[in-house]
Length: 62
Image (cartoon, rainbow, N blue to C red):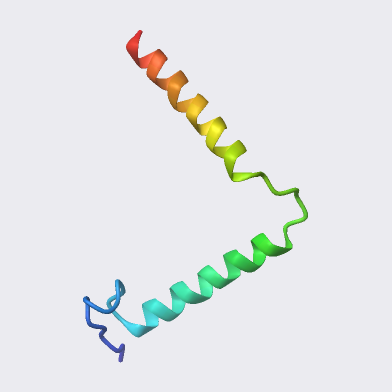
C-alpha cells in the first residue's frame, strides 16, 4: 500500500512517487556531472536564448 503525503508538504501523492522522482533526479545529476562535454556559461546560453526569442518575435510580426 502506498503512503499518502500531505499536499502542503509534498507535490507528490505518495512516498513511492517522491522516492521514484528522487532516484530519477539523482541519476540525471550524476549523468550531468560525468558528462565529458565542455560546460557552457550561463550568460552565453541566455544570450543565445534572447536571440532566439527575438528572432521568433520578428518572424511572428511579419
